[in-house]
Amino acid sequence: MQVSVENTGGLERRLTVQVPGKEIQDKVESKLKELSKQVRIKGFRPGRVPLSVVRQRYGKQVRLDIVNETMQRSLQQAIRDEDLRPASMPRVDVEPARLEGGDLEFSALIEVYPEIEPIDVSGLAIERPEAEVTEADVDEMLETLRQQRISWDTVERTAAAGDRVLLEYSAETGAGRVPEEGEQRLAIIMGDSGFAALEAAVADLEAGADKTLELTYPENFREEKLAGQTANTQLRLVSVAQGKLPEVDEAFIQSFGVEDAQIDTLREEIRANLTRELKQAVSTLLKTRLVDELLKSKPDLEVPDSVVREEATGMAAQVTRGQGEQPDPRIVQAFMDQARKRVRAGMLMGELASQNKIRIDGAKVRETIETIANTYEQPAEVMQLYYGNQRLMQQVESSVLEEQVVDWVLENAKVTPKAMKFQEVITGASQAAQQN
Image (tube, rainbow, N blue to C red; front, side):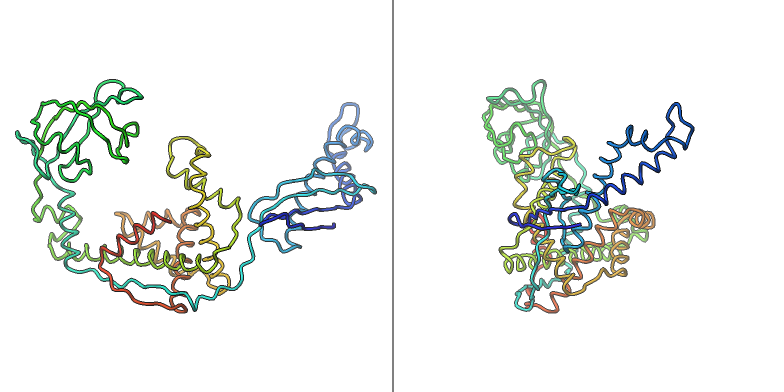
């Protein structure tokens, strides 16, 4: 077998492969002899069908099968021999041709991963967040838990800040009525809805009262047909309810699974949960800052288009889940830049692991799975689920490897501690996750 590799531009390579005709013919003859002992043809005893008859009836299909098998096998061997790192499946570019002497020649295109020079992290400057969970953070979370258990009592008055208002509405736009028939229902918390114009419109209404006005709806309004639109709107105030926060008593504390009903025990559990959340947020921020520095250090790194498109398709599928099997190509295209950044980041992190012989730590994988499982009521079942699901295990292993890479970089880069508050770290990590 002879192989030539041509760089067609970027990360695409053309493999041209020649296979001796004798090699193919020998395999065809071997297969035909095997068939002659297996096939049943009327007029001949089983296992006694003449080779000439088998060749006449099956020769064309057998040759086609052997050629296809030979192409697949020779391509894989060529990739190994040429030490290529394929990023996509080869696709035949030039259909097989018979040359003089009966040799077979064909060409295939393949995208490869780029060769990355050794990455020197000693010059990378990274800020390490330093924060702790304070009593004030525990107090704030305890108040959040109370807000989640708020009870609502209907009142006969106009709405005030903090009240829950139930509305019915319909709107007329240039594209038609929303909804087409009847009314939509909407509940908002006065002062916290993000829709100031609507709050102002219902502030002087009592239950059962109507109002017609022109409203400009927020860009993120839940009804897609009205988002960002100005429409003539018919409102009806259904009810006003006043919230009542629960007391932090035994019943409240036990509702969170605290058997001894002690406030100190609940606060300890809250602190433990916040500490886990803080640790994950710090890890997210460190990884984001490391990735940003890596991308700056390799601004011209090429990445395979096929891998980028696959990543963009996956991102588009997440936001359009339930709307079809394949996301709209226009949505996929909208994610291409973000996907390219993700792929570049992933390649650089993987290259750091490879160049510095960083291997997945099995103990950390187990610890991570245990941490995840302990957030559920039945930890043992969750752990069994993870260990029995290859996809979930790969996700955990990938995450652990990234954490190990970050830890290694922190030991070798220029790291500056930065004092931060708990909520600053959480917010920063959330924003970083959305951007990446």
